[in-house]
Length: 124
Image 1 (cartoon, rainbow, N blue to C red):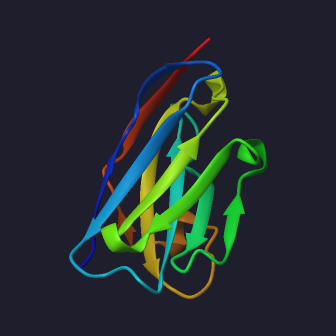
Image 2 (image 1 turned 180 degrees about the horizontal axis):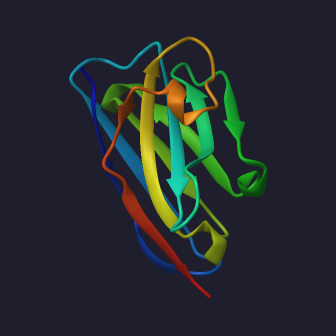
């Protein structure tokens, strides 16, 4: 079993930055694919970014490319999402997800471990 705990959400003005953290416990998540999803009210959960644990491969939602960066820190068993130039449309609950895999995974149904979510609100 893997437990995921997100932190770092909050309220920020448009143009500002936040860094989300996802701490994994229960087992070492090397060889896991990690991801950040988000879900806004009334909308489906969407993939924001995903990364292989080695960090060698990443994928980003088109609307966040150039603004968001996903990264891992093996020593802390933690994955991060650095979010810059935030826009009101980035407002959502952000979820960390994990799956034992060597491939990048793009669907929420591909992941079997989820955090509880952290709220990000961007004011205009």
